[in-house]
Image (cartoon, rainbow over all chains, first blue to last red):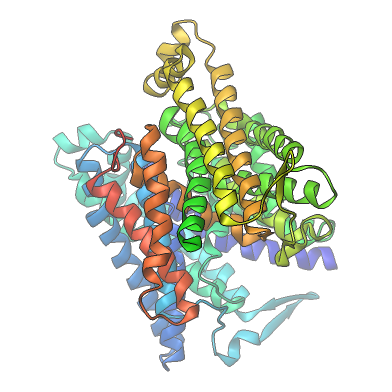
Length: 291
Length: 286
């Protein structure tokens, strides 16, 4: 029974990491920018919702505003920072260092404006739980599982079916051709980061509700998500989402064998195995982008 | 005067760490945000050995060897695959190292760290005060900087530059690229080990936060502010950035905000340099 509980906990936290992973992967596979500051936007959105709830806003409104804050900060990041660097022919290394700078700035703005300490949402329903066949699921956990699957399916459908989704895929496969055919990659890159950042706001808030938040922990979440993206095959959204769940389940079950504080080492170990044995990921034969 | 000397000592120690990062990031073009972790391994090695009675010089040599080995091992999976995999390996090395420093309590003292690390002594000379220690740190910096300078002027150094510019061409010209990369990782690790060993004996107290991801980002900031790829850049950067906390101390801030404020300033400096001057003050284009 313990193992079943750990398994379910793993699946739920895997769904949350899966959203981080697909949102990172979506932006990365389109632009090739290694957007470390994604973790900073994650932190920012979580704290925006926390501050709104603390100020008396209803939770749904706080979540929506956090998503909006994510979309706006994502749009601004691409528009003000990454595009400017790209216009100056900055190398990927320079983009990456700028992104680390932005991550540092966002985390510390959160620490200064909100709180450098661990905070929890002040809402009575977050401690309630459901009992299904002997497995306990807290209300936030149930919400995470449900919302994550909806968003994952939504993004897949959006990418495959809508005009903007197709335009994004066209640009991802050949940015120069897209420029010539007036698909306007610069504007679309900003849309993509806005969409990614709006998505990442959801797990940021919900995981914050389920557990607690601290300004500097989001980098570990992002690292797990990126490892899942690589293991799943870069550019494959189902691969990234699925591998996030697999990784989180392994991490959760490993608690039965090794103390939980070593779980970061476990994730990293899996990553090393993957790049040694199967660097192209499970669900993709070849890279679309030079790595 | 002591205040100024301890500023110089810290800046010199971080110059050595910056040169270590410079070898990887500036010279051969491998991203690294784990140099604080390697430096930490050096610091813990020197501290633990000296606390069990090993002389400073031997402890420092052990740290150099261990750090070179760890830097090579941690980068080995990625040396064959260029580019973005190294980003993950690098972040991963840093985060795992911090987890080890915190959780291996029997050895590292956990979150409270190690204190009362003995003073550095070489052949009857004890480096106790800042005035004495500055000799040791300057000597080490001169040795590291000298080896860096010689390395860059050697045929090996030219091969490293060639690898950064066009790895495939270097392979096609019959150069052993993998061997060169492993060699650079080893030298870079050795530098970080020296920096860590000096840090441990000078401060005489180390804990996991002395070598966490923020410190690694600080070393990267020092490198890009001073300028990558040049010797002078790696020395200018640390001297400027170690002064930032001193300047912030003049503003009257509550103590809980001091750390975040300092980090915020570092982050803003990093972004500003990447946007307006990616080559830094005295470096070349990254």
